[in-house]
Length: 331
Image (cartoon, rainbow, N blue to C red):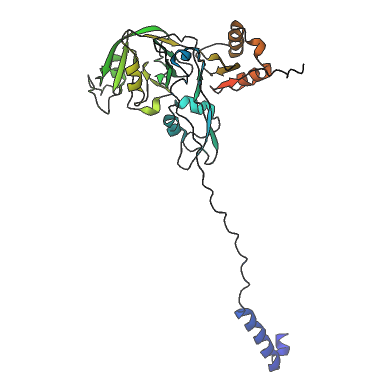
C-alpha cells in the first residue's frame, strides 16, 4: 500500500496529520479517586480497676461472693494485652484466657477485648486469712474486722519449682529486703552473688512477707511481666504497685492458705455464677466438680443446664451467670 501511495503527496499529508494527532492528543482525563473516609476517633470505654469488693457497709462485705464486673474495652493503636493486663491489675493468664485468638503483643486495633475484672471468692475464704488460688493465679485477702476483701494477681512457681499448697503463717515482714539466692538457684546461675542488695535489680522488689516455710515468700518483683505466669522458683510475685498495699493489710501471724480451686460457685442478687479455670495440675473433672459444688449448696435446681454446659465447654476464667430463668407468673 505504501508503494502505491509513494507518488501521491496528498495521501502522505493525510497520514502525517493523523499520526500527529495521535502523538499530541491530550490523554483522557483520569477518573477521580474516591476520597478516603475521615478517620473515626476510637475511644476506649471506661473500665474500672477492681481490687476490692464493693459493699454498702463494712458488715455487708462478709456476704459478698462475687467481686466486680466484667468489662469490655476497644483496642487502641499501640495497645498490647500485656500492658492492658497491668493497667487493670490483671494477670497475663487472666486476660489471655478471656480473649482467645487475640495476639497478646499486637491485638487487632478496634477489636473489643474482655477485661476479666470480676472474681468469685474462693471457698477457703475466712476473716484475717490470705488465700492464694493457684488455679487462677490470684491472691485474696479477707480482713479480720468487717470490711471489703481485696484481690491481686500473682505469679507462681514454674515447672519443677511448683508453689506448694497448704496452710502457712506470715512470720516476718521486710521493707527493701535483700535477696540471698539459695544454693539450688546459684547452681543454675553461678554468676549470682551471695546476696543481692535492695534496689531495682532485686527480684524481691520493695516488700516481702516471709512464710513459715523458709523458701516461700509473697513479694514484689523487678519483672512485672511474670505476674499471671508460672515464672518463679515457688514464691508468689505481685506487681510493684500491689505489694505495698497487701503489705500494709497483712499482719505477722496471719494465716495463708494456698489452694487449687479450678471451679468456684457464687451467688449475687439471687443469680448463680460459676467460674471455671483450665488448670491441668488440679487433675479434676470440671463438670463433676461444678455439679458437686452446686449440689452441696442446693443450687442445682436454680441452674440452667445448657448455660452450665456452655460455661464448662469454654472455660475462660470469668464468672458466668448460669441462672435458670423462671417463666413469668400469670396467675
